[in-house]
Image (cartoon, rainbow, N blue to C red; front, top):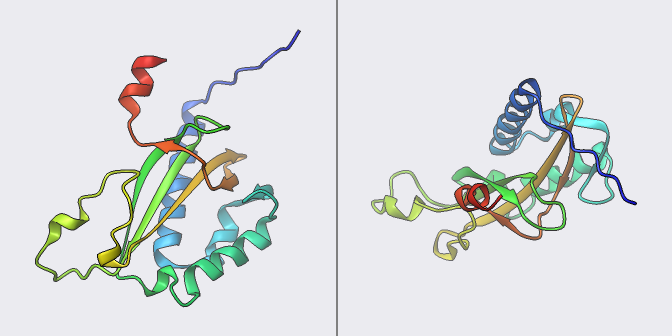
Amino acid sequence: MNTCNIKLITETEKIASTRLLSTFETIFCASNFNKMKGILHKDGCFFGRMNRDKACGYFYNLFFNEIGTSEKNQIYSLRGISVDHIPGEIVLEMRCSDFGPFNADCSITKKQFGDQPDLKQNELVYRFAFSFKDSAIYSIRIPGKCTGEFENLIKNN
């Protein structure tokens, strides 16, 4: 016989998780890998096998390589949820493009979660799924499948 424990998330944990996601967004947009270490759990597991220090090195490369996010003019984020082998984790989609703020066609910035990258704007899309523990980010992974449509999930569950 298999047993399963279901743990409800408290309001305090929701607030802490939301703040951590907002902090991650800010750090990512600022390309500040030094601050990343402060929000990652010291015993966490990142991208499958990495510890906290290796994950900070990964973000350094993501920010500052030849086509890194620090070279992009615009970075914005969208939120979704994972529906792969670890369902229910919050997914943050970071969209980084060369879109200039003074371009005439602003309609190209109206993206939905999960849209394909706009190659005309040299857009890069990163999706990260998060888990939290002890008021820190405990794991970050690349989700296999995710969605931004919460209404269908709520109606069906």
